[in-house]
Length: 455
Ligand code: HEM
Image (cartoon, rainbow, N blue to C red; front, side):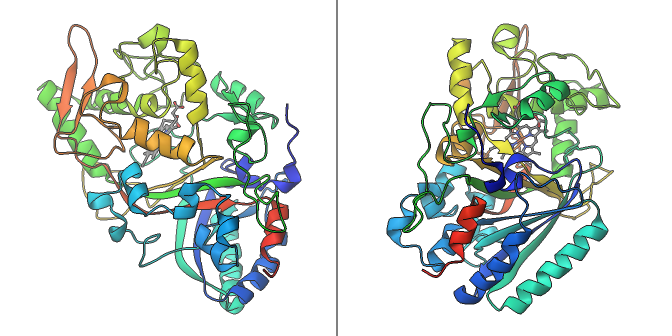
């Protein structure tokens, strides 16, 4: 087993800080003067939280777009060692097609990360409470202003809801792989009854991955191990149309059964997610939520032996598309092995106020700052998005995409497999809209020091 260099790895790679630090803010910055920016960076680096820091009140982490590296003097010979997706950025034609960022989701409509409002650097702030967050944010913003080298393009507040539910009302953050060599496995086992422990190289560059290989290590002139202990960070600001989701669910439940009540709506919504609002998996609890007023983080289940047909958890449900577990192919072992190569660790948080009245459009924006880390953007995040979430023929389905977050086409459908017959619902509207996004690289601590050097 690889021995990880925790003091060189940024703390965010190893932890979401969600338990101790529920309040967060993301600062998206643009480089305006390289020399001044490097001087400012030099002052920030000592504040960055590493994998050995045991912070309880505040954590700070940092990541960079390819545009930042280029402005810092990285040559194309340096850049070529990074992932192609990272080099290109999220908004090229190729990436738009892979992501499904068309129609309402097209980058021209975004509030950041597009040609009009490009970003170079991401600062991630996490704090024990809003007071601490405000204090640290104010100090950082003052330093940014003084630096004369960077400016704030967007400041994005975020937070973990006290009940850990995302805006549609479902418990979030359950299905996560753990990183070998970190001790996360034991904690995950205790919490969810299951742990998918993956090779460190899936999430930390420079170590062996699930293919017994090491993903290409970014190397720059003078620093051949620049990428070591770094990772790629994917950021997508996803607006959630809560009223649209629940009105669609209500109307559709009534179309299926004129007598449908709240319990039927909740069941239909759960079929779309693959878990009940409490988090309980449909594969284990197909008929009713076993914890209607509590939480259930059970994660010790597969679909192959228990639910190959999708009669419990529909084949196209969000959790089954994003982690098909043992049901991708006929051979469950082969399926599990393949799926292990396409996992991401989600580190996002909700933004905006929660609405109590889920049927009324209060015209407030709310959603998920979807953030994930992976060593290989193409094989992990983009694969999940393109080949599973947005694939019209995922697992032999026909003309369906992820019912929660999939790209829609005019006949968007969702099949709920069942006995004696399946139910098919139609004309799913967009329940989410992409508002911004970018690919970042989160370097190790030694690489951060390389960045401030003159090139
Ligand atoms: C607003 C957007 C989204 C919402 C509201 C949402 C919501 C959820 C919920 C409620 C769960 C089940 C609880 C859990 O296991 O954590 C879940 C699981 C998951 N989601 Fe999403 N999600 C969103 C976007 C995405 C996107 C864009 C991706 C990847 C492309 C993704 C990947 C995953 C994965 C990998 C899981 C875990 C599946 C498992 O291991 O069982 N999600 N999501």
